[in-house]
Length: 216
Image (cartoon, rainbow, N blue to C red; front, side, top):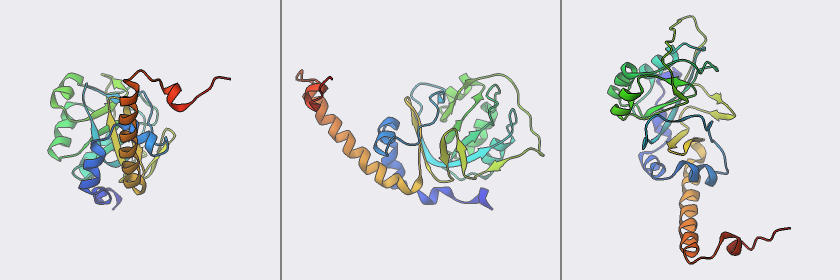
């Protein structure tokens, strides 16, 4: 059963640890400017970060059963990535569901929609990235069209089970699992180059001078 597949196996603990130390914007750039989710999706509390294998789900608008199924079927460390079919104005996830997800040691939630119980979620500290907060309740229709741990189009980003999800204050990026090791290596090189560049910029030299850019 797809939902019971251990998506963590594709990303080793070593790769996840290395990825967690990289900024989302750096990984996005180093991987070839791919995987950036909508800028509307942000951490619900300052300082929250998220890193883990994707567990993608999709449900009908204003129905949160897909997330309940994800909490039941995802493996420890998995990040639930939820598509709400454009029904943004609903509170799909809150304190009660977070309590369950934390007990199952899941890695966090990234949702292209809203959540509620913002203060309680912030206090728990479990990573939640969403479009915002909304008090509006959601339905639970067992006859709905659900996709659980399947490859999904999340905006213009294709997300497969086990892909790397990395989020911080700049936003969320998703990197195909087969590219993660290469993207991490490129990120480390990029960070080293930027650190060297900033040391030079401290002397008063500008990026225009360094790059030799000329205005037309």
